[in-house]
Length: 81
Image (cartoon, rainbow, N blue to C red; front, side):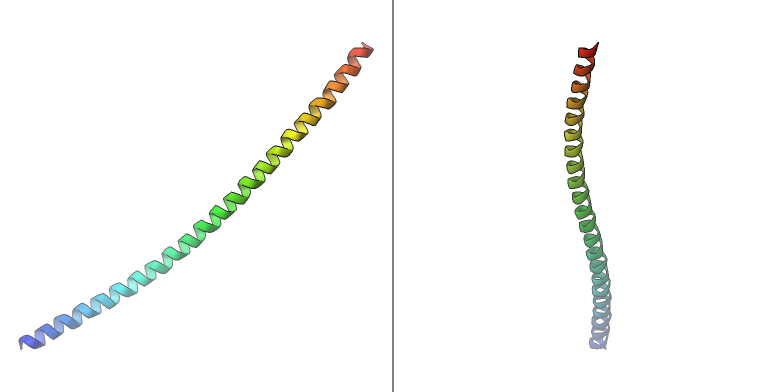
């Protein structure tokens, strides 16, 4: 009888472990999906950051060109005035 009780406990414990393993595999799959999503966000943010830097550089170049044009206009107006 004692052996029967030990076997039942062992079977119960095995079932618990199998269930816990299934739950952990499901959780692992969910975490992998979250990691993939976060990696996509990082990649997207990185691309957006690069684009922002590029646009900022273009803005600075346009600002310098505009300043040159305004100086020429101011110089021309000063000569006429």
